Length: 365
Image 1 (tube, rainbow, N blue to C red):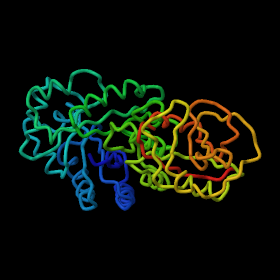
Image 2: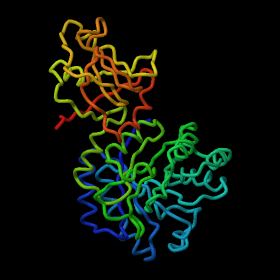
Image 3: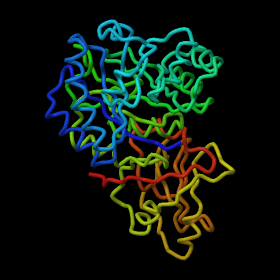
Image 4: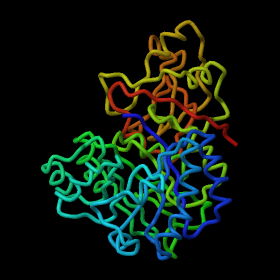
């Protein structure tokens, strides 16, 4: 399934002109999805139409798909029925997210709405909610899943629980989404904003690393920045993430040579299929550079998890093979060329047999 990027806006809290600037910047960078909260609506149908129709129409001109986050109280506030979703279609929305669920049959019926609106489910519950809906013969092309976000520090999902919840949806081929958090954004839907991630482990990580981790799980199709407004730099960093190939940052050592820099920059690294527990091996580069000398570096050390090494001239046929260390060991036939930052070691579990990967490098001080 195609992988996408999204942003969030909160028309009940935000400036309409700033919303438009933000969406234009995001659209220019390739973002295609909007999460738009209606949970705070209290102004009645006419005011809501005036407020939301304009910004959704502008978003549609930019090519965005807009999903409105709603709760049962919204239907009461707007005096509309779950059996008639015309109001949301008139606003220009492409779908609605059900913050709270029903009995399964109701959700299944909603997927047959004549307006063709997507019905997005809350993914952050590891129960048979989705299976129940599907048992009522839901119209699955119009069924999406999206995790919650969590404004309070310490309240977001633990990683193992997130995986279990997400696997339920992915097994059924449902389009999935989850949230990462900006460190520049000032607000979300509520008056507590310690960031808006789905995963607690992401709350203080760089935003591009959050996105890379989400995509690396293979369980999330759409990564959405939960709070508003992410800085231009953050938008650009997330937009630059390769959504299909694992990217690893690496801090280079000062001793790195020209040939080692070329090997590191190779764009077709993959882990050998016959894996070993002690390291990730990228072996094609040793073939490509078999006739290029690579003298040993003048250092002896024990390599640590996340170190990136390249075989030197002492390594015979394995000269110029690139490896990522998974178990500490020493070997004078290998040159240390860089270190994957500590916070990015969470990505190493996704280097499976035949996994494709690449490096984003920065020089050592």
